[in-house]
Length: 209
Image (cartoon, rainbow, N blue to C red; front, side, top):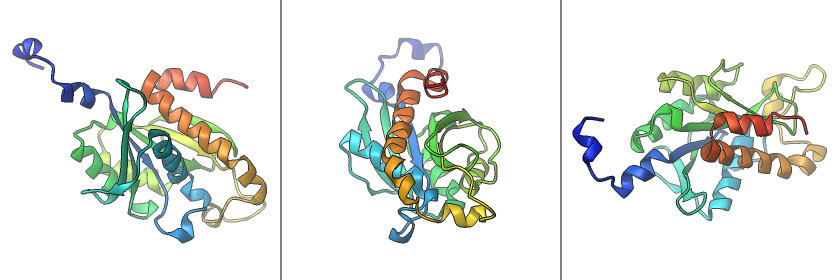
């Protein structure tokens, strides 16, 4: 911001841009993947859109987008579900950031996490991808600093089941009973980051029950 900008009247659009968050729910497109553990990020995106009273629509970027405000005068959420497969999530995310002129620190990615127990939500900024191909591809495509991650715990596969097979299976019957609460908690975590910041959200969601 230059010296003269200090005296420039603030436009409504400026305030909106400063308080906008891009929230991306990761998953794979197609009905055959909709119930997979790997698609829990998109399930959370659906919950957020429902809370905003918004509908996902086709977008100029390769994604479907729903937009709305958490409350009057509050943060605006641009909730997106990439049309690409998980392994190539980086392109759509990068395009969305450019379209909305948002820095990477305004990006919240919601994704499944093997290293977090099922029915648990954990928040972090940056860090290694841990073998998650969606996070790996987004990190490569943005390459501009760490972004916030809402890690939705799905736990490790039982026995010797391959992790790649595990994440592409639907949640078990027992898991499905707890799934609505898990999705709700993850959506709450996104809203907390947008409203109160990462540290405050971590204190809330990482504290013992």
